[in-house]
Amino acid sequence: MKASKISITTRIFLFIGAILMAVAIYQPIWRIELDAPQYPEGLMMQIYANKLAGDVEIINGLNHYIGMATLHSENFIEFTVLPYILWGFVVLLALAGIIGNKKFFYTLFALLVIFGIVSMIDFWRWEYDYGHNLNPDAPIQVPGQAYQPPLFGFKKLLNFGAFSVPDIGGLLIVGAGFLMAIGLFIETGLLQRILKRKKKTTIASSIMLLSFLFVSCGKKGPEPIILNKDNCEFCKMTISDGRFGAEIITSKGRVYKFEDISCMLKYQNEQKETSFSSWYAHDYMASNQLIDATTAYYVNAESLRSPMRGDIAAFANKSDAENIAVENQTQIFDWNRLLAEH
Image (tube, rainbow, N blue to C red; front, side, top):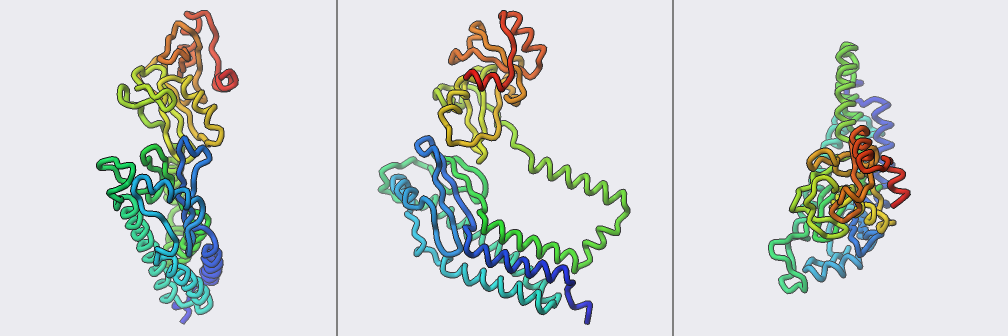
């Protein structure tokens, strides 16, 4: 009889999961953020279990011009059904914790996984229809252009950057599922088998797992600049010289490329409301190779003659920067001074 019962730990996880799921019903589950030069503070649409919120009316106004359907909560059957489904999981999670039956727990976990998969498929289907079924009489029409928002992450749509991620409610639901997954590991004995492995194997596996997580979650590197094709975000000129270009990545993952380091600095000074996470610049001594701008060494001299006459060159190697500085009778400086003077 004992073998058919779940452990106290798993029961606690189920009760916590029920609380998380209940709170999620009243929090935004997903959000889609839009940013563009004409909206420096950005626009945001939040998706709750029973409604849409945020800058929906402004987004609807913009959608009208490109032929996308306007968004209204009452048009989505999901907003009627979803609260009941989530409350159903709240009750079932609590019930599973009270009853403590393993089969009931396994079945509930399978239902939650199926619910998650079906929800994401339904969300993707809605996004596809939303971005592809356009009004043929729209004021602005771009042949072959679709406006499907990303299911997850960043995507550029015309001059807008769209960023789609789980919101507080979505993270709470994921948290409930994560606790159930840990409980599943406990009840199937998988966790115990892992812990009983030889110490060396366990340590090696842990190191490999941590290394993978660090690589996966590490900062995004630069996006290569395609010379004679990519345009400067600030001056709009085509980037042609692989010695003076630069690049910024926002905290939302949007990439901006520049023909001249001075263009990047001017653009950044204009975007007071935008949060940036990474800065890159061409290594003057290499061919179209981007380096971390925050750790680079800099030389400013008129004889360098950069495309937009910012005349600033970045170097990965300090000795290279010093040699160019001596040739131009000037001194090298770092990122902090570059920002302070520009």
